[in-house]
Length: 85
Image (tube, rainbow, N blue to C red; front, side, top):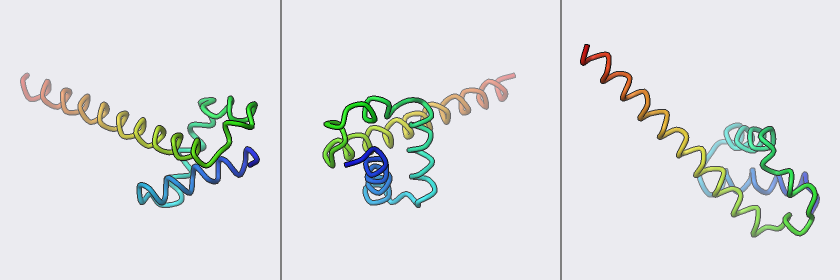
């Protein structure tokens, strides 16, 4: 599949696997692209498969969830520090 088709497949999988709306899924893929996550996929056609698209969709979603959890914990610590004062 082409690079664009591959990105579309990753986006579609994000909506199907995690019930994300289209805008949220697109944002995840665009942000990953901006961070050069897909550079290798553009260069190597053998990485543009349906199986790889599913692996990447899962990885992107899990990374986003981990980032959100880290931010939540940091905010929680800041709130606790303020209360302790």
